[in-house]
Image 1 (cartoon, rainbow, N blue to C red):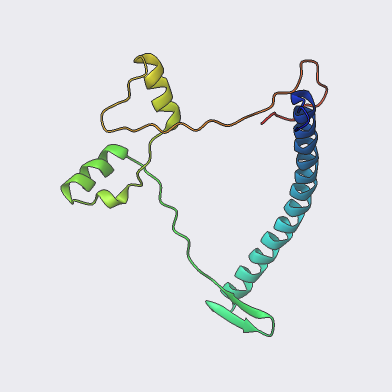
Image 2 (cartoon, rainbow, N blue to C red; image 1 turned 90 degrees about the vertical axis):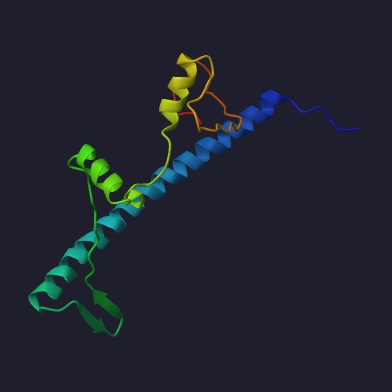
Length: 141
């Protein structure tokens, strides 16, 4: 015969674990931010040294510093991009995804119906909300 599980104790344990994880995450994030800042400072220094030496890479005993280009496109005129993509059969210029917030709002306004060609998959999960009057200001999951 299994002992009865008291949901209140399970919720209490879940909340305690969540709080411990949050506290550890905050410590880790603060420490990681310092390390990331130091790395970024060193990246700027290495890029400056590469540029001053007219080099794209410099090999050292501890590794090779190299310069690479990171492309970050942005849209200046979506209409022009769309027209060009259609005219040139270049639809691969776009990444395909649906905005969940839009679909949710659409469904609410249309009695649960979705736009043509859209499938909706629902997943259910358990979350725990803090009791009213809680002094801890961390967001609940």
